[in-house]
Length: 582
Ligand code: NFE
Ligand code: MG
Image (cartoon, rainbow, N blue to C red; front, side):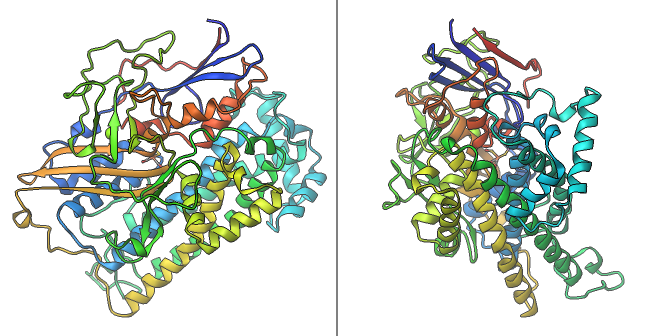
């Protein structure tokens, strides 16, 4: 087939994603398909288990958004059992989720997305002195001397000269669509390396509250971190391994260091790089519908007025009307498999609400390996979730728009500042770079809030409350014979929920509908493309189909995670990196 571009797997993401696009003779994308090419079965593994153990299995859905499935899982069980958790546990969870955001977003920007905009080989031509001047003109970050940039350049030069690009291999270096001057490229490469070192500190927050990272510990009914008011730990007591004032002070130090990098490096770099690519604020929107479930309760998940991020749906870019979301309403959230490699009991064209959702890996139709995907048939291991039949985008852009629409002042101020700096209207947010910028903005908004949650936690402890776990519903004999619940949260990549049905104290059904499923899913029975597909069909022209950099830019702007989206890797799935143009 002429003008048929296949990117499989698309690199620098978690898991296996295949993108196929058809272009016209001028290189414009006219048709796009997004396909998850690995199979997982965690929802099936969970059946028959003790609901209190579910989080430990569910959490292994992913090692990138390492804690989010743990949180969604304990919240699902708590919702089913009408289980209240102590305020300290709520605040600890907020701090852990927020630390995940900041870590994940910075890592995504520098390590998974920046090289779509930054040409590492061009950095070799930069003048370290001019790079230092550029860096100092946009930020007060301390590491910005000519000597520092000269050292970084030497390091990169050694990689390139020895032909050992390693983590930088497989780039489209020298592509005509790279537009940064060599100095901006060198600055960004320096910060790529800095961010690798920086992230080691951030994960300490998870280690202190959850014992380790990745995959910190959780507990149905609270948090697994006992709080002690003794700074040293009493002999034979639990304090030595508990959260005390020394540990809380360390959390404060980590937040402070973490946010210095966000304020002085991540935010200015995003704006500086974006200023060279302003046309990318005009393409890659796709559907224009956005969904959030809401998160970061100051009080409880049952009190939405206390959430930092509100829940709701925005349709057709209309920020004046927020539609309420009800996760228990079978007519609102449904998953479709009409174009997925799954069957459904009631028929392949039907949508199923997650309480009655099915994960049938024994699909009877044609499956991979494949040469070319067919949009009229099944073509993905992802399902297609819909809200009242609408395709919706989830993630940082949805959240920032929701905060903006609700008049959240720090969001309004920050968005106004960013748009003014770039001389762009609000509509610019509905785009590939709008999505990338929204991720940076919410890192700042949520990161800043961490100090408030930490202060509130310390004040609560000082007030005499050291409770972190409510044991009231721990004993299964207190549970009803049958119950069900939904646990939701805002994961870094967007709205995440787990639905659980408990019968005779065991898990009867468990369904996870995950952010990257919402965004990367295939067409639905009505033929409506998913958000990735729609975004690629929104004003993309490939300058060089052999090097489809434009596809990477827009797909990476969503920060794909296919491990999450398909929730045991197919042992027969051969890993091949191929970019085919036919
Ligand atoms: Ni594997 Fe995840 C996040 C979840 S993906 S990264 O954020 O849930 O969509
Ligand atoms: Mg699922």
